[in-house]
Length: 507
Image (tube, rainbow, N blue to C red; front, top):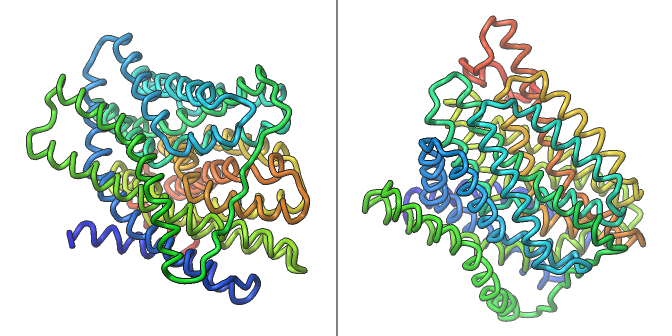
């Protein structure tokens, strides 16, 4: 086995194993499952582990060099209109290619799929242009976030209530495993040409601003279409008895996800071919490496999405429903927090972000510190989502105070933490959230007779929100400790000296 692939697979194993163990323990203590269901779950877990390994290696070999190369090339151009056009086309293209957007469109049946997809694509394209121009003109990220989220909250008062949670969820859903590595690398490439002290700070923030585009787009559609309700197709547990039945279920699903991922990745390959044709940035060996990377990415995503949709999603719905109907329903909150703590590590793009952060900051913010910080943030968000599913609390009471806290913190923490925090929100809410945590909340709502669209939807939005606060609290701790040491604001010392997250002393 390729040594790098072996390392990535081992990382994936350590990420997926804890959540697998939690589900198996719950199946023994609280929710007895049929052997066939457990077998489906375990096969799904194996596919997740292998898929994440291939995806991470593929992203390193293809998405990251391509995104960074395009970023460098864009930053060398002096023609603003050319930059705007290229960035808009790239933003819209990779958004249409995102598999999770197809899932979102299927849930909002009151709006035609193509209308929703193209509107969201335009929203992401415009916001990505704003994000890139921000780097060129050195505009404060926190100021821009205040303005854009101010517009979001203003529009939220005119958006139909049944549509609001879906709108907020869309921001996390559309910044998925295809878009995130590419956009993050592009930000690094654009900022790398600059030699000023704020270049590394400005390399982050593209994902953050891009994820606002879908929220605004879906809200505007909700206002104009004024849908009175949306729908959700419940996840069904396949009836399997023998091991042959288990294999058959996965084999039947595999062609669907193979086609879906191929449709998603072809536009990125098209961008690579056009970029290489005009710029000749990559040598022959580099081109071969990028192509092999695309193949790894494709294999990884096919395995990952098949495993998570066929093996994991039905178990999430079953767990939520059975525990909600038992006398232990309030245990859903601590159980949800425990699942949230570990599940974020199984998001394919999280490890990409954490390595990018460690690389750009020269190890000052370690990948392990980011992992712990994001785990704590997502743990809180899933606990809040479980509380909403049980009690029916409006998402307004959580999302608005949460974003106000995040935006206030953005004015006082070191600049680099603002970009990292708001990027991490979009990255944390990936396919594991939409295919395991969302069915978990839906299972609770269905069992308790709640409103799925208002009480279950919104978990993606909460998962996207809490990392903003958690990472910026890390920034506050850094600022306080660095102030005592008398160091500047640009992360000149090791984070392990300042943010002792491995010891658990920071948050």
